Length: 330
Image 1: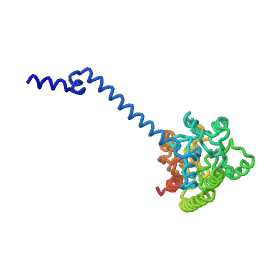
Image 2: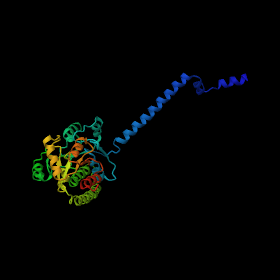
Image 3: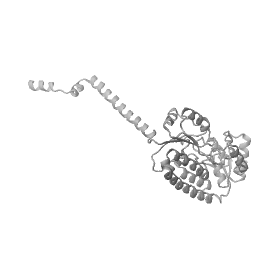
Image 4: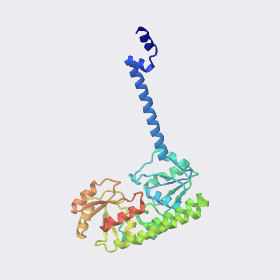
């Protein structure tokens, strides 16, 4: 028996020793745990970098999410990475990019700007151009007829050509993409710029562009029919982002904000009076900003707020949803 006992002792494994020594066991367990956590975290970081970083050697940057749909519609099956500077949950009026976003532009082949006087571009495009002087920056709204920044849609018509002729973007309504007709102009410019980077794909890009333009045209006709018989031609919006849409469909935008400022008590009282006189029951506001003031206004007119976003990435579907909400069919 003694002989067998000695044999067992001599064959003890490190694990057996670990069990006999609780302190050593705890140290080894903690070390293994630390290594495991490090591996998991490293894998997660790598996965995030691969997911968010450029996946293609063809990289196009743009300002807002709707432009990504335009770019992908044009490029079709061509592999392309799209860098959207202002995420959907943020406002291009106030958003500041992270250092990593700016650094990512170093490898970009092209920057498609709105060129409409949107605040993000006013603050950052010149800095981006200075940091990356070889990066082509193309104004995709150069053929858009701008509206003044604060207006009722009918009053704006007389000023449109004058502002466009003078090239003055300081007082322009920057929300040019909230119009299917403007989007068509933006897409034409985008296609030309992208084809300039990949000229061997020009024919393919133009075919893709034309397919998407037909979708824009079909939706434009659908919205025109849905809004023409609306009981009130005035829509009450908190932020004046829908002036171009109102222009396209013979509506009037009654905006609470003016030049980015909250209304005075007198202005707010005038809006409430007009809304009640015209039987307006809805206040349209955006999910990207606070809805508190819009809710207060809705209570004043015994109405409700309806969320519509001009920045959704699914551009065609979103514009259809916006029109449905305005027409009261959604």
